[in-house]
Structures are given as structure tokens and as C-alpha cells.
Length: 157
Ligand code: 4NP
Image (cartoon, rainbow, N blue to C red; front, side):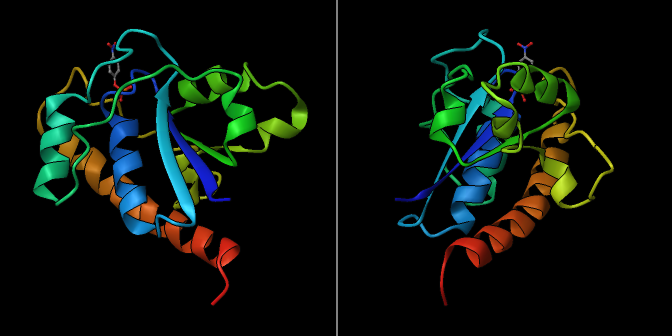
């Protein structure tokens, strides 16, 4: 059974689709499954924002086939790790936890890089084009740390 990882943001069209594509590119497909979802329902069924598709494509990652969906309490059953992009996502996801133990699956993603600092991945949706490049770099850096940790924990050498 592959280890299942879920990336979560608000709209599931800018940050979490990038996080999904980047982390998946760093993990062996037979051992890990990576998905993403949004806490909001505004963009259900839509492909990622063209600016996220564009920056990923320039880095050699194709996220154009992803489809936005909304995070639900059921995701706590189906995923082993849930990484959220900002503090607001964290509250919204924690509010849906079925029990105390499930809450341990949720981490603010940049805490993997800067432990306990609670740094947000900024929402680039309403900002300038270069916000997407900044978000890409942040996610690429933290996904290196996450991939290394997951591979160490879940695969034998
Ligand atoms: P995301 O960005 O959470 O990184 O996908 C957003 C996308 C859409 C909206 C907000 C954030 N929106 O308000 O529609």
C-alpha cells in the first residue's frame, strides 16, 4: 500500500497543485501517492491556475491534468500526511478532524523547513506573476526535505 500524502490550500488551483506536482516528482510512484485539495469550494472541477501550470511547466513538471476538489473529513481516513499552506488552511482542516489523533496528521508545510516558526506559503492568486515563482521556490525547497524524510521513514535501503 503506498503512503498517501495530501497537499491543501484554499482554492486548490494555485499552491497545493504545485505542491502536489513538486512532491510527486521527488518520490517513487510505486511507494507514494500524492494528491491535493482546497478548503474552499470556489473552483471545484477546474484545472490549476494558468500561472501555476506555467511555472511548473518551465521546471519540467506537468500539472495541467489536475482537477480541483474540496477537502472533506473523509480525507483524514484516506491520507497519512496532510500538509497545509497557511494558518487559515490549518484551522479549516483541523476543524474537520474526526478525533484528536487525526489532528497529528496535519502540518503547516513550511514548518518542515523552519520548525515551529509557522511561516505561511503566501497566496499568489491576487498578486503579481512573480509571486508564483516565489511560491514555486519555497515549495521546491520544502519538498526536498519532506521527500527525504518520507523516503527515510517508509522505504528500506
Ligand atoms: P490557492 O489560491 O489557495 O493557492 O489555490 C487561491 C485561489 C483562488 C482563491 C483564493 C486563493 N479565490 O478566492 O478564488
